[in-house]
Length: 295
Image (cartoon, rainbow, N blue to C red; front, side, top):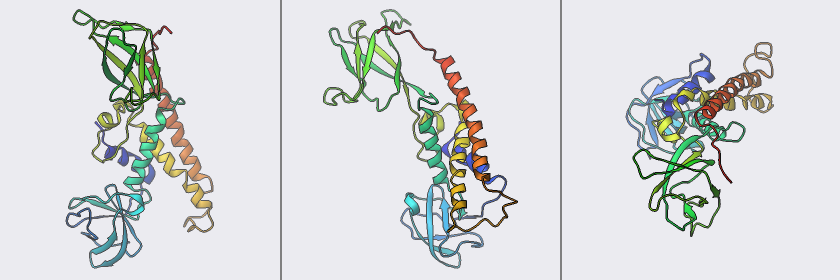
């Protein structure tokens, strides 16, 4: 099972294209409020104004003395955190783990749009009460649509399908705490459990150790897709930077890397991503075919 760190490394491999970023290592653990960081190897490009990336945090270097850097914690909106001894330090990275993870999460958000139609299947239960029509979907924070309703029958293994129902959103939370009201036009056995299966967006990854399947609900067979899209998101803006006259020009000549190269690279990645998304959407449609519903 892949973690957020695995997806970040796959994205980094696509972005770096065989180049090797400058690396160092922490010599001693770093607390979340420390203002100095001791490095293990030659300081190389670490000097005043350098940016260091450790795990999901960026540190701005104010000054250096020997192997010790005085740093500003939580640079560029990152969160100061504890970092273990020997943690890898990326020096002036083009793409930090924080930036890559943000692009991966943006990808996960986009997959549940109507354009792609991907989702994770989740469940919640309500208890049927005779004479009651509206039920709160307690604990549900976001859903795309309800897939099916079944109620636990009177014999073992019996779960009849409920076909007459409707869903109302943005209801008063004083009556429906979730904001969702499930309205039943078809009953079940009194006191019986109704299992609600619903389509939900994918979750967000917050820590490097977050499991992609259990935290984000993203299927293992599709874990190759987010790195493709994240890499494209991160490469595309570099064409804008290249065209900005105030920016440092490329050290290579136009003949070596002509204008439009970054845009073309992003386009190729997006083509691969889009093909894989269509394949996964088809897989979901096969796995969860449309069920007949009576209005």
